[in-house]
Length: 183
Ligand code: IMP
Ligand code: MG
Image (cartoon, rainbow, N blue to C red; front, side, top):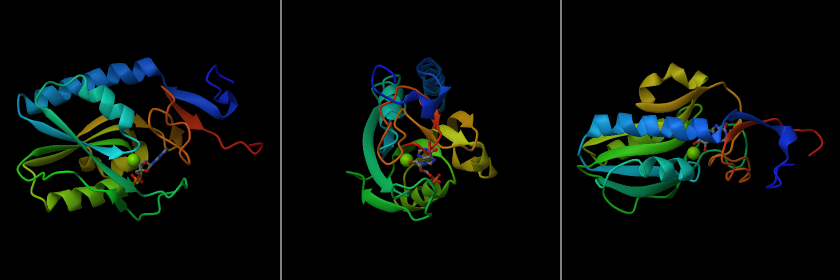
């Protein structure tokens, strides 16, 4: 057990807290280069992007605004259902704004392509995606993610916002999760 009580035998660290934070600083530099002084609306996709958006946004300047979308595509299971449900829409209009979708992880890419189509109809000035993690199988659709943190193997991961059945989101690192038979 760790001092916080997380069972370590099922978790294998994939990305440490310092690797994540270093990469976020680099992504922020890429974003500043891409947008300059233009105002940008960061749209966090709840709940998985919560820590990523919080940490990333603190590297950006005063020109940003923050809004959230809540979607569900997994229903508590570890396989994508392919069905994306909007549970909470944006608070305000995105028409004419630079919109940057902030996503935790791109797996099949189904969630993103749905959201892109939906948000495109609202006529933003631009619509881009920053994802902390992209599974390498999602690279069949590389155009879906303009800014990516890490390319990771096709394994189920938890921590730093990512959950399995709402658990492990609050780990400060990202780990692969082996489903133990004893739990
Ligand atoms: P996609 O539609 O298959 O790309 O799935 C995207 C969403 O599924 C992500 O935003 C996550 O919420 C969830 N997801 C996909 N892979 C994982 C994983 O390895 N761990 C935890 N959640 C995941
Ligand atoms: Mg998500």
